[in-house]
Length: 113
Length: 112
Image 1: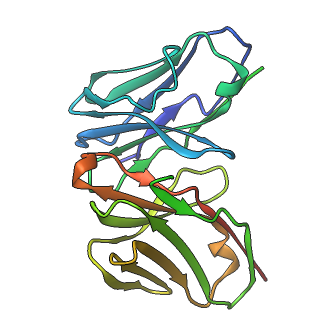
Image 2: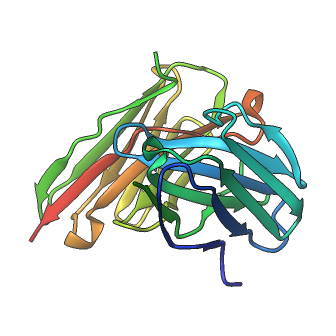
């Protein structure tokens, strides 16, 4: 298996633009997680899905952020409109169950100018 | 108060030193305790996984959990420059369903 796949790896955009981050989890994993990592706040859970259903989105910072999982092999995280404070590394992770090892993707480094 | 507290460091040690990394937590519901290692510009990867109080050893790494004190540790023996990374503790409890709670991470540098 190729592991968790994320695209793009790097994204530079201007304030106000829409940003879409994509994730393909490991086949067979029932849980998918979106995290954001910054120096100041560390690794923060934004939202997670179980069997394609959003379970907890309490970490989504505001309405500008949305995430969907239309099927078991794909999820996206959208930011519209983007702001400079959204600059961070966004990780997607998947796991077999909540208590199991989470496998992280390589991350998307987002810079909003 | 954060659910998990971890000193961000950075921690710098000479090669061969014994390293001690620690986290404290506040919620006694946590049942599973993990350590993730994150190299620069990479995603975190699971290093150690423990369920109960006590010690678990894997090569040069030992994870220790003290539930009574709500304190977890990771020891690295004979540290190597390749151990230079950020180490994040992560906790999971049944009340959180699928949600792992991560510490801030401690950045470790092992100097040759």
